[in-house]
Structure formats: structure tokens, C-alpha cells
Image (cartoon, rainbow, N blue to C red; front, side, top):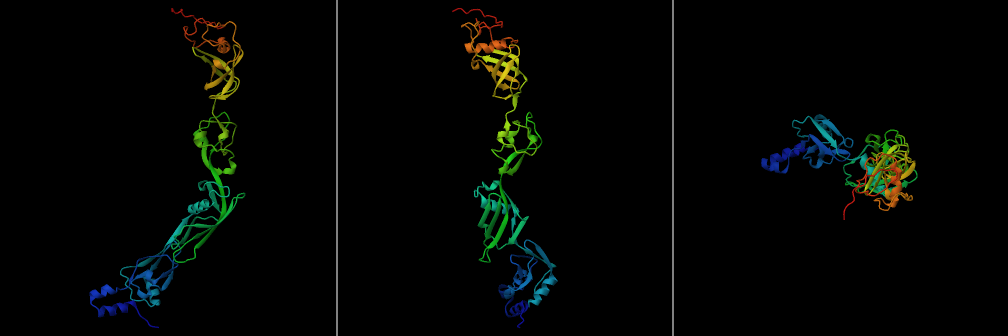
Amino acid sequence: MIRTTLATISALLALALPAAAADDFIAAPTLRASVSVTSDVVRVGDLIDNAGSAALIPVYRSPDLGTTGTLTVAQVLSVLRAKQVIGVMTGDIKEVQVARLARTLVSKDLEAAVASTLERRFGLGDAANITVTFDRGISDMRLDASNPGALQPVSTRYDARSGRFDVAFEINNDNNPTPTKLRFTGTAIETVEVAVLTRDIDRTELLKSSDVSLERRPKAEVTGEPASRDRTVGMQLRRPMRAGMPIRVADIVKPDFVVRDQTVTIIYQVPGLYLTTRGKAIESGAEGDTVSVLNPQSKRTLTGIVTGRGQVTVQGASQSAPMAPAVEQTSSLKRDDVPAAAALAQSPIQAPASPAQIAQAQIPQVRVSQAPAKSE
């Protein structure tokens, strides 16, 4: 074996050439304090500068992917000497840091890759709504840094009944024409974001912000359109529901402004006439609902529209009962308006119309002051 050293070559050239020329053509091998490698072995050329023909000689096994190892200078020089590399300049270096570069695939990226592969296939929807769970707990996956390519799906299997998937990927690399292969199995379920009750809620309660939270639930658990959090706050449930139950749009209604058997204010209103009295709600209703109310004085049942909390407005045109005979044609009320007004008449009038607007009208059991006749 011919033993040659980089130090000997450097010394001979320095004697044969001027100093400036020696600096131009060759420099002494110098140890590096910090080394980064991408392969699974550390070579002489990784550890020292100006290694020459010895650069490709392997000397160490690389650290694990994504980790860093430390070597003392004595350890490095001992291994280099065993490889016939001596005369290395170390300067004031005490130790050498060797880092193994890696490409890290975080679990979220892997879940997104699987979801994208399944997107709008096998009856599933958007990738953003697909929840992926791997069979083995996968945190972060490290690959050799020589694998820069994207994950390309090459095989996809999915069972819509069980939600099981089996997806294989390939990643192109720089050093090998054969791509790196990865395979993942687990479950993938389409989910929806839905408002969920944080406590038991009775039908009569108004939903508050603290009563509702947002969660992702399997789509199969939420039949119908899921309700958003903003849409549920301030509403009532159609039925009592327990904590943890998802809320659908069909489960919520506008809050009842009128509750059955509640004492309400009945308003009778037509152009030129505004009467109010107290009554009893025969049924419950939200704002805008049509409900029946009872006038306890006249014992008449009226139909009106819920216009506020504890308030029902009876529109004259909505009444179809026959006109009372005592009403004259000169009345400012329409014929269809009179029975409802008469039903309210046995109660005190809180806000009568002006005398000029109801001149000559005769409403049974209601005193109306007659305005002076206008001269033509």
C-alpha cells in the first residue's frame, strides 16, 4: 500500500513553488467545526476542507435524521489517521458538530395529503371537512433531505361503510431514481361544524351565548342542515334537548312572544281607530305568528298577529263576522271591522281615535264624542 498524506503533498508543493503560487493551487486540509450531511454516512470531504482524492472516503455513520452529534477533535483525527489522512489543521477547534439534515413531514401535512386524495371521491365532500385518523399514532415523519418531491398518491382504497382507507404515496428523490414509498391506513370521516348545547335546555328558555359551543361532528350524526352558533343564540328550541346534542336548523324557532294562557294586550287597529284591551292567549306564538286570543269581557275569540312581547294586533280586515245592525253606513269603520271593535268595546279604551275621524259612527256599548260638523 502506498501511504500518501495530504500534508506531504502540501509540503512538497510549497518547496517547489513560490509561496504565492502554492496558495493559488493547493491549501492545507483544514478541519471544520460544523458539518451538515444529507446521506447516511459522513465522509472525509464532509469533515475537512481541501480533502482532495480522500474526500469520498466514508468515516462515520451519520446521526439519526434531523439530529446532531458531537465529536471531539481527538476522535476525528484518530479516525482520519486510520484512513491514511493525516496532517489536518485543527486550529483552536475543540469539537465537531455533525448535523443530519432531514425533510420533516408533520402529522397535519400527512392528514391533509390523505384528505386531499379522498376529496370528492367515494361520496365524501371537501378535504377541509374530512377528519383523518391513522391506525398508528403518527406525530412527525422525517425523510432524508434528498427527498424533495411532493407526495404523489399511487394507490387509494376507501370503504364508505366503515370509513377505512389505505393510501400509498411516492416521493421522488435526488440520489436515487427509485422513489421513496409511503403507505398509510386508518379512518377518514366527513364532518360538519355544528352548534352543540353545553347544558340541558328546556323549550321555554332562550339560548344564550354560553349555552352553545362549536364542534365538528360526523356528518352522519347531523341529519338535516346544521345550525351555526350565531343563528342559535337568542332562539328557542322546539323541544327540550340535553347537553352535547348537536342543533339543527329544524330544532330552533323564534322565541315565543306570546305564551298560551298568558295575559296579553290586544290591539285593534284600522285607519282612524286604535283600541287596546287586556285578553288571554289561547295559543303560543313567535313574532309574526297568527294566534287566537280571548276577550274575557265579551267572551269573544279573536285572531291576531303577534307584534311584540305579550302583544297581539287584530287587523280589522281580517275579521269576517257579520256587521252589527246598530252600525250606520256613515261610520268611518268598514263593515268587516265592526265585530272586532265591538268585541273589544266592553273593555276600557286606552287610546281612542280622534272624534273628527269617527264622526257619526255608532259602536255598541262605546261612548264616542261626536265632532262638530264641517261646513262645506
